[in-house]
Image 1: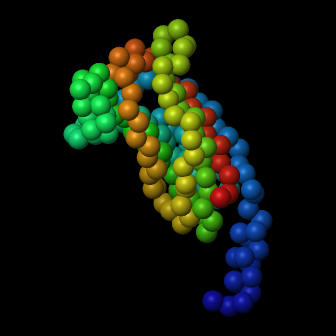
Image 2: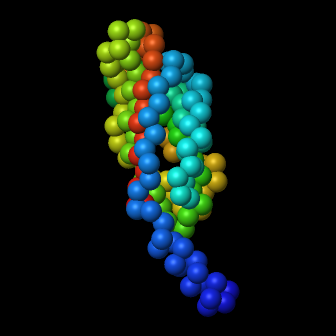
Image 3: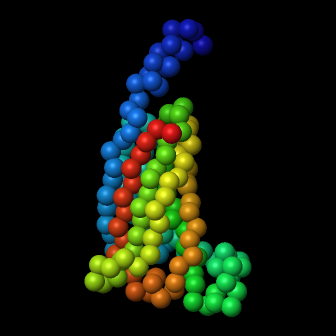
Length: 148
């Protein structure tokens, strides 16, 4: 690679924004169904996100074996692409609400979006009450991005 191309690539990576716009979205609650995001900011694209049910031997069954009948493990799955040579971080707030708009459960935290990734998936596994999943009517989410 020539020095000129290398210098241009380095300059381009230095000109990337330190943070990108946030996305806020709400949707009807549905396990295992994708919510389209289609948000592109700089080198990062957030394609879609979902709350997926988890089966088999799960954290709930190991940590609370006598109460596992009341619990269910779910996984927040975020599909993204990061064309940059830098890692980015997504701060995610994902929550599900009842018919009255009261929060039942959710997740607040950060996830690493690895560099040079195409249609990768970041996942977070949570234990929650089955009752809450049965009563959930709506999801609300907020995601903000920043170069890591």
